[in-house]
Image (cartoon, rainbow, N blue to C red; front, side, top):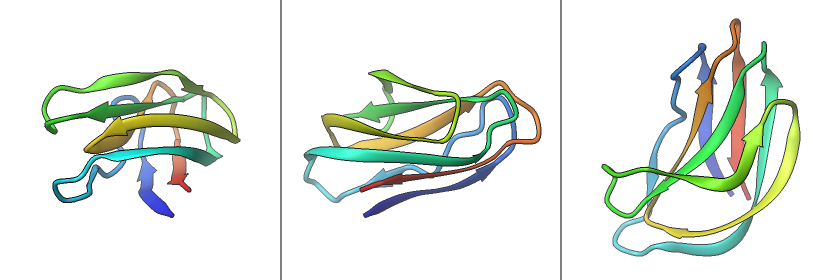
Length: 93
């Protein structure tokens, strides 16, 4: 399991970024997101270098959910946009 971290806040809050050494993640994962959304949207972003970020297509979460995602990347993060009084958790498993 890869806990992306807890995040509290509104627009622009980014969950903790994880890096797995020199190897890329290449697998099918289930992304779990839960907590208080307060009108927020959570997206998943990946990067090959930790600087240039790309949104994973089809991941736009506005309510508690579990979603299968597949990607190949060295870095991954979840980003909150919008909302107020947001307290969310994200887990890749």
